[in-house]
Length: 88
Image (cartoon, rainbow, N blue to C red; front, side, top):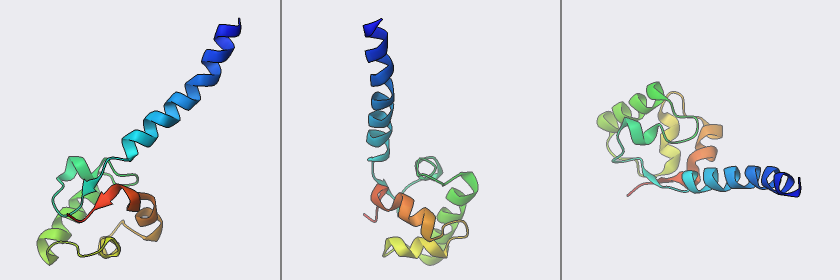
């Protein structure tokens, strides 16, 4: 019975740790393909395609804030992904 309690208590901690390590991977927004961009919180297929199109139309991003020119990326989304993205 004690083992089950410990296991039940440890499971959420393991899940949080796994999610934290998954989200700590960096995505280079100037080179990432659609699949890599979709690994970012709040970025689905349409937003990933919009990022790639914006990058093709306007050149590489010089700052994280430049992502807000993409339809679907606002301040809230940018704040959520800021620690996961790189520019180079």
